Image (cartoon, rainbow, N blue to C red; front, side):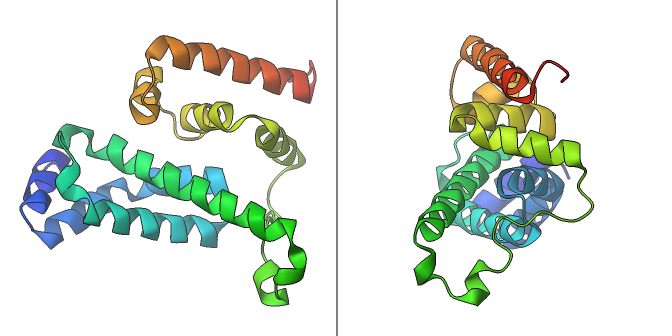
Length: 176
């Protein structure tokens, strides 16, 4: 059974079909969430929240063929919400207990120095540019798919992608 058929069944109330549809999208979802949040625990929580939101709003999905795009858009919004929440918490660290601050913005040891530089440069981009770079290079989306996910024309996405890459090159130096 393909994804579209599973989504149709899920819209009719078949919870198992919804589970299978989500299961087919799990790798893509993890890549997006991890690219945004840089932390496995946060990425998994974001996936869980996006799954819950999509289950509750499944009846609003108009075209089942766009389930993956729709789900990615929900996940991106969850990740953005989480980033905003973390930023608010980091602004006033007195409110955080030691348990809450443990693991915030930590980088796994296996990451290379290059990757750290790239991630730092990405974090300095505007959110729109960062989202486009993540979708294009971390999730291997086409310009058309990115346009669908973000709800902007392809030409706009191409322009933003060009500007985002230029900003990254400028930030990282000519050697990149």
